[in-house]
Length: 338
Image (cartoon, rainbow, N blue to C red; front, side, top):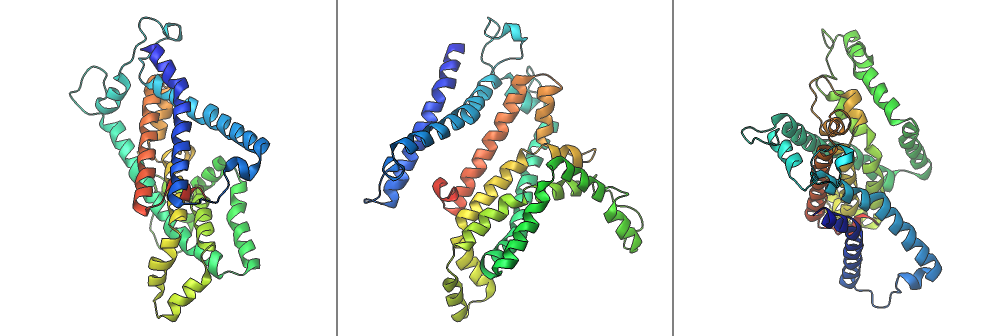
């Protein structure tokens, strides 16, 4: 069985590349471009081979192989390094059983702490994604369709400049803002709006705000790119026909920007669900987030099979979310990567 796992790890990348190649061929046939040149014809043999080798090596070595190794590792028991590959090393579901029941031998009760943290993380990530969309869509529309070039450059600079600061420093800055003695509580107390400081960090308001801010650009730029390519004449025609503003956005702009919306939603969700720094720095004492638990499995419990299993469960959930978003918005994988 261990030998079979090695074949899966090293044969997996070939299968993944073949699947993506088949998807690209099927999509091209579906779109119907009989006169179009193929990849080698458009780029030349030398550049095409270089691009395929660079992208293939990056995808296989940096993404596919580590993920496959992690998946394989999650099905092994916790053993001392010297026992790996020995008689005690075998495939088991102990790590997944522990995630559900909190024990590798008993199924009497559920692992409520880890299950609750997992589902809270997924729900909070969906909430952060929705907040980011609500914040970014009006701004992206203004920048793409209304703003003049000089104002557009100013908006771009204002959006990008804060991200020149390290993510850790930004998280600590948010902690200073939202602490009981921070700027927000001081201002509210000074204005007489509250009688005593609000524990924003304990209520996880600081964490959700920090997460929303951290991945704002991941939603903004796909939306801007999608809306910017919309012909202004379509919007003018809808206005001339008497369509109200909400009708224009709901039935003209948003359907056209579906690839950008889907791309932004998937990126913000996946990055939020996998965030570690913001939950650790901005989370309160009772905050439940799944990635610190994954970190603890690796570096506190030193149970790497269990940490791999937890990480694989989170990866599977993100893949399901991406597929669901593609289904809801009725866009293909190729459309959201344009």
